[in-house]
Length: 128
Image (cartoon, rainbow, N blue to C red; front, side):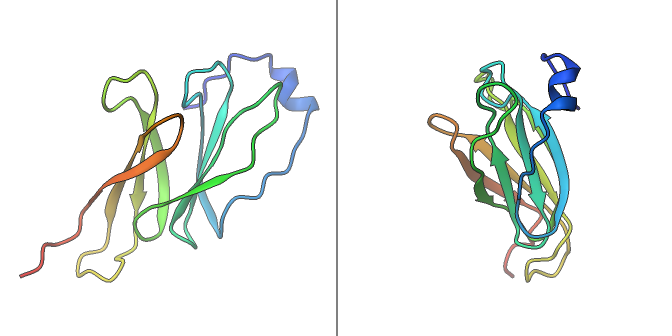
């Protein structure tokens, strides 16, 4: 869901090009760190990462920071999973990543500052 606290014309008149990872497949706009600036997260299918662009002054973004996910992330959702007031990111991954069953879910939790930590990777079958 895109929630914008800024006038729409800011986004229409100030156009920027952001380069995410390999084969971007999903995107969400949220205020991850609750600083009243829109941030951007992109699921990169081709390199199994999420690129995070933190909003800075006006409608500009800081350089991206990539975080590892499961194989072939395609979808994203942001939610405050731990009640910290900051948004964590969950990715839906459709690739098998070398396990028998395709599909997994990665949970990236906000760490210190705005660093995300890959905490869980669900969907992998346990070893026999």
